[in-house]
Amino acid sequence: MQRSLKALSALLTYPTPELRQAAGELSETLEKETMLPFGVRQQLHRLLTELAIDDLYDLQERYVLLFDRTRSLSLHLFEHVHGESRDRGQAMIDLKAQYERHGLAMSAAELPDFLPLFLEFASTLPAKEAHDTLAQPAHIFTALAERLRKRRSEYEGVFRALLALATTKPKDDEVSALMKLPDPDATDLAALDAAWEDEPVNFGPDVSCKDGIIARIRGGLRPAPGMQPATRATPRH
Image 1 (cartoon, one colour):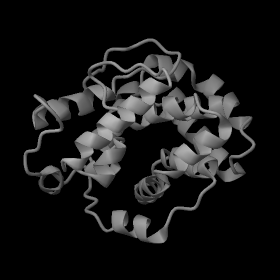
Image 2 (image 1 turned 60 degrees about the vertical axis):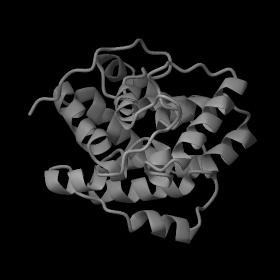
Image 3 (image 1 turned 90 degrees about the vertical axis):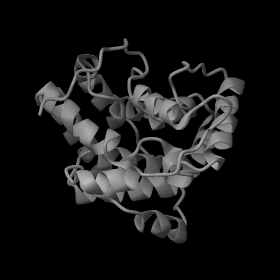
Image 4 (image 1 turned 45 degrees about the horizontal axis):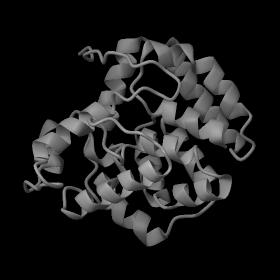
């Protein structure tokens, strides 16, 4: 399970040449995960095939449109729970402290609720604790999987895999509440602006809302576990 969580963490990072080169190894790792249903493994293999053979700039553009541009698909967990409310600041502090207690170091530019980082943390835990940790945001994984299914994105498989590893069915009312939130198309700029519009809020001392947004974007630059950092390219339009 530890290796599978690291592989799933890698799949949710920004596509880089290093990630492409690791596609075969990631595929072998996920195929050995007996907890993943056959259909989920097949979907993950299709995503890995895309990452291995599609044009890199197209991959990067698709990633940005999905996860950076669309709030309803944000890879920052607390975005779906707290939005920009003040509660998010304390939740960030608590999660960061939990990471530090387990010896997981973070850079100053990272936010602790960035999902690849969260999965990296979960991969360091004993199996039962990892299951319980994944179960906590299971309703978020379900909502993200459904939204990606509507978009016919193979990234859906990552969230189906996380639900399988969580081994806990999320509460229907929690999933329903998330599914009622706006889910605009990434090409609808007006709807996207409306979805991101919030009252200014501080997450802590001397941290502005603008700083939080910058940190969110930089969080996507964290390299996948075991890979070297790469410069993020500008998507081709």
